[in-house]
Each structure stands twice: as structure tokens, then as C-alpha cells.
Image (cartoon, rainbow, N blue to C red; front, side, top):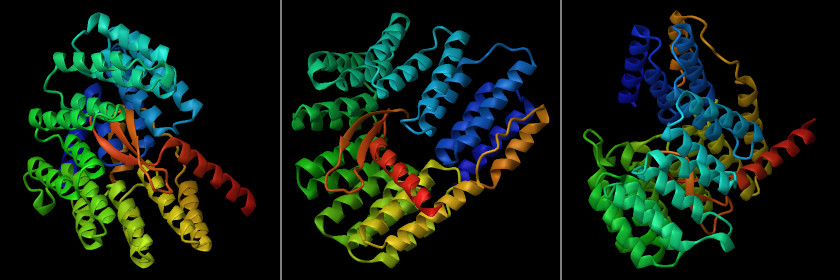
Amino acid sequence: MGNLAAAEELYLQALRSRPSHAAAWVALAQLRTKELRQGAKAGRACYQSAERELQRIGAKPNAFVYTAWASMEYKKGKEDDVKSVRKSRELYRKALEADPRCSAAYLQLGVMESECGNFDTAKECFEKVLTFDQRNSRVLQAYAIMESRRPRDEVNSRRVLDLFERALRVNPRDAGVYQAYALYVVELGDIDAARDLLKRGTEVDKRHAPVWQAWGVLETRYNTAKVARDVFQQGIWACAQPGGGQSGGRRCARLWQAWGVLEDQEGDHAAARRCFSRALDADQRNVAAVTAWALMEADLGNFVDARSIFERTLKYFSSQSDDKTAVWRAYEIMEERAGNYRRAQQVFQRSMREDMTSKDEEIVPERTSDVDMVDSSFKEKSKEVEVSRWETEGSDLGAEVWMNNGSIEGKVPAKMMKKLRNGDSKKKEKGR
């Protein structure tokens, strides 16, 4: 985390020197919301500051700012929240008014509309980009995935495959395309072809951890544990970062986590603990590793250890963090599954108290000097719209593995989070 802190300070220095530097505001917002796992408030303050500073000097609106802002509002909002979608559409509209040929805005708007089930609208966005940016492999990739997510009787598999092939012809070294292509081929039942695509992905980009993870997960499901272990180990060696220690650094966290899940399934819990420990050494805020480890311990009856894992991790997140909310919910569900309803209620009440005391008051700097205010307000708290998934089995959490524009990670799906939120509402009513 030391390098992230240094990066944050450098961005702040750049903004003190030139407060109207839009790219620096966007980079700072993304650092805080994605890497430092702070909430939407931290990112929103940066985007609002960028907008204000540009207006102050009479500069034209910046499509880059509005596109990044829109993406954050959608991802940080609840996935079934109409308000977050409406807000994002408004910001994308501003981005396209500022630059009618902004590929990124059309791409992310198209992905959002696809997520909302508006497939024809998404198609229009992708087709629009391809009229002036025909060699955009990420647009072709997202277009292919969108077409694969239509209702089953409307999916044209040949068209999906053609779009993936076009993306690879445009950019044969895009490992993210190989990964997404492989996930779709798995759905079609051609495991050998999927394996070949993932292998090719690791060859074109040996340090692309998500491709290694996807390959390891595939071998876990359709081959032997020995083969999967070998893939995870090769991936860790390839993705290890200088100074990453035995864990290999943050890029390797997802590989250690997936390896730990494999060992848990194989019944080697000591090996699973070693893997989860390495994952958290690489990234102490890796929610997937925390949740998998804690639930494994709970399944083994080691509730003291499971609670300790959750409690230790909660300290690493700011109160507005979506990741922290996910950890609270997993903690509560663990207690409920075990029949510890009183403890589950206590966990719920703690999370609600924290949420109530940290309700946002929007911070919108009024002056150039307020760069320092943004700095002090958030310093103490300290790829990529979801586009494809594999559902996991045997989990009460209804977990899924998502491909986020070039990265795979576990998460609780929207339908389960909605169920949890409904449960929260019922608890509130009972407490009144």
C-alpha cells in the first residue's frame, strides 16, 4: 500500500500545481475508489472538483471526466437502483455532448445498457463506435458478450464467435479478449477450445493474472487438482512483482485465493489456509479471499477463527466502502447459516450503526485551495464493468465469478444483494 500512498500524494501535488488538470482528478478518483477501496463519496468529490475547476477557467467540458464519473456512479450504486442508472445516463450524455466521438463513453454506456437488459440500445452504442473506431478490440469484445447475454432463443452463437474473432484480428495480443472468448466457449461446452484460448492468452501476456486465474478455475472444474495447482503456480511465478515477497504482490492475490478454494474443495484445509494467508499478504483487502477463508473455517466449526478473520479485515476499509458492506453481509450470513441468530443480529446492528454515522455530506470544493480540503478529508481513510459470469455451485451465498473487462473476481450477485437488503428492511421494522 506504500506505493499507492505515494501515487496519491503525487496526484495531489499535480493538482496543487494545476487544479484544472482533468486527467489528474480522474486518476485520483479512480485510485481512491478502486485501489484504496473508498466509497463513492471520495470519487464524486474529485469529479465534481474537476468539473468546477474547468468551469472556473472557462474550459470546455471534458468527456474523460464525465465518462469516468458515470461509470463510478453506476458501479458504486446498487445494481437495481434506477437512480444510479439515470444519473449515469445523464453523465454519459454530457460526455458525448463534449465529444461525440468518445469511444469510451459509448463503450461503457453500451455495457451498462446491456447490464440493464437493453440489448438493442447497447447494440446501437457499439455500432456507433465502430463507424469511426473500427479497430477497438474492447468494443468488439463487449459487443460479443452483450450478444451472448440476450435471451437464449435470441442468441446467435455464430455472430458472437465472429465478433470475438474480429476483436482478436484487431488486437491479437489482448489477453482480456482471449479470456472473455474462453468463458463463452465454456458455455458452449467446448472445454478443450476454451483451454486453448486461455493458454494463448497467457502466452501473449504472461503477467495477466486474470487469464491465469480463469485457466486455473477451468482446470479445477474440468480436470485434476494437480493440473489446476500447476496452472496457479505458473501464474504466480509469471505475475510476481518486484518486492512482492513470497506472496508475489497484489496481482497474485486472486491466484492465491482461487488456489485456496481448490484446496478447500480437495479437503486439504491446511494448504487452503496457506493459500488464503498468501492472498491476504498480497492484498489485505481481497474480499474474495477473506470470505472464502472465513466461511471455510465456519464450515469446519472454527467460528472463533472465522470471526477473527472478518473482524481483522473490517479495519482495513473505510466506512463508505462497498467492499466493507460485502464483508459485513458475509459475516452476518455466516452467523445465520450456523444458527447463531443473536450474533447475526449484532453484526447487522453494528454495520447499520456504522452506516448511519457515516452518511455522506457531499464535499464539493468551492475554490482552488480546496484541493487541500479534499486531501485532508480522505487521507485518513485509506478493468471494468461486469460483462460475463460463471455461476458457482454449492454456495448459500449464490456466489458468481465475474469477468470485469479483463479481470475475474468473485462477488455476491445483484439478486442476492437485493434479497439481503430486503432482509435488512424487515429487521429494521422489527426493531422499531
